[in-house]
Length: 156
Image (cartoon, rainbow, N blue to C red):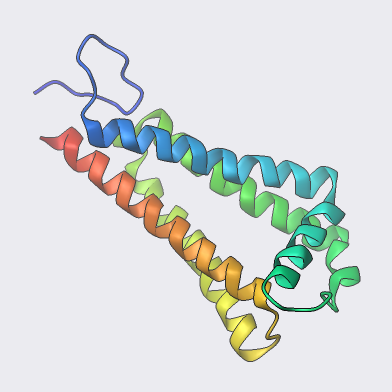
């Protein structure tokens, strides 16, 4: 059996599940990397977008927006999302070798989703928290689906 990594560009075409994995993980990785750079370089933009989503979903201005731009949360948010991008990049680089990275990747993303849902339910009924929960849960599900399907295709 020939070993095919996720980045193999040899003469044998990759299985369809691997090609879908590559496309999905490239998009997901960029979806983490680009916002992380924004958190570092323009943190007020992230808060404005969060508030805009909340207002589109029927909420008013986000009451805690001013307190969300401090350096502590800015660095924590940026490094969290950069870590997600890095782990996606590892899986994209070599799915077989770095497949165990899927566990902490999913833990980090699902923990974030659950905590946003918790904030929405128990602390602040601001609609953007619910939207972030839904997006994070869908992203985690997609990450699991595409990686598991590609790994299975590589094993056959």
